[in-house]
Length: 187
Image 1 (tube, rainbow, N blue to C red):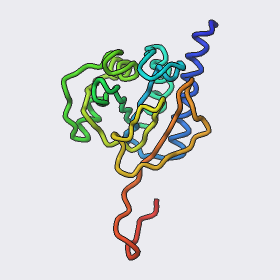
Image 2 (cartoon, rainbow, N blue to C red; image 1 turned 90 degrees about the vertical axis):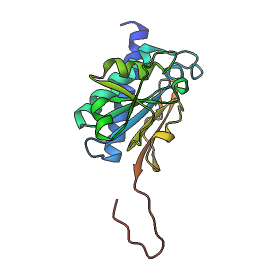
Image 3 (cartoon, rainbow, N blue to C red; image 1 turned 30 degrees about the vertical axis):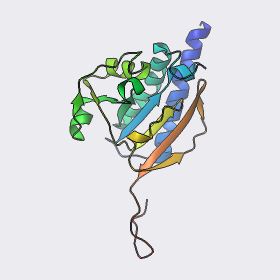
């Protein structure tokens, strides 16, 4: 096996392990949404946006997507800032959440490699401007917070990087409102 293939297999395996660990920690219900921001440049040790790699993005996608599909969880792939961090989702996920599709197709240099691979691989992809996801994986500090529900709770995984990219994960919970007299539901 050549070194490049071995490196991409490692990226796939790290991505899969991170997704599994995140789902174990968050224990989400099926049909929830996991937003993933992914800098393939950072994974390969480059500065974000400077070394985009479809192969690295495909490795991450092939590690994460089967895990989510098996659990009935929707993947939302965040585009890069050239598409205003729009989101690629399956049309059924957009419809279920009342999200209006926009008229754009991500490409490596305008949307990013991970969003492009997601768009090309989903069975019926659409792009939406925004989503309020239940879970998040930020691979390479891509700033996914705008696509998470209001109260994001960091989840520390045993895996803190994928390739050369820093990994941050989160789950969300409902807001606590009220005050000292309020009674809250157990989490």
